[in-house]
Image 1: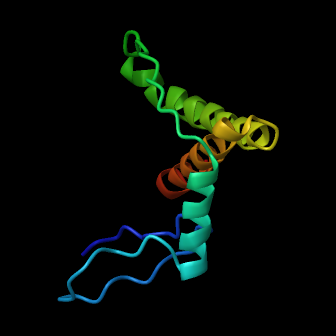
Image 2 (image 1 turned 135 degrees about the vertical axis):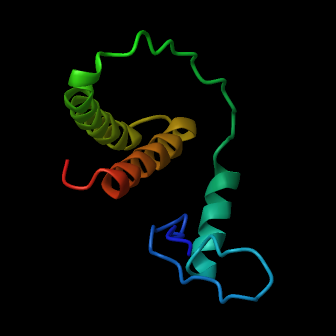
Length: 117
C-alpha cells in the first residue's frame, strides 16, 4: 500500500490516486489551468542551474543528546523555511520561485515527518 500523497505542483491540493491497473503517469496538477500556469511561469523565468554547496556535517553528537539536537535542528529548519518564504516575496525573479518552492517543500516535509514539533 502506497501512503505517499501526490500534490498539485501549483497549489498543493492532494491529487486523487490513480486507479489500480490503469496505465500512465501520475498527475502533477489538479487541473489543466494549473498545469498551463506552471509551464508559463517556467517559460517566463530564466532557469540557471547552480551547483549546490558542499557541506561537511562534522562529527556525530553523542547518542544521549541526539533527540534534543534533532528537535533543535527541526525548529531551526522551520525558521529557515519561513525565512525563505519571506525572501521569495522580494528576491529577484530567477530566485524567488525557487525560494518559494524550497520553503513549501521543507515545511510540508517537516509537517509530514515531524508533526507537533
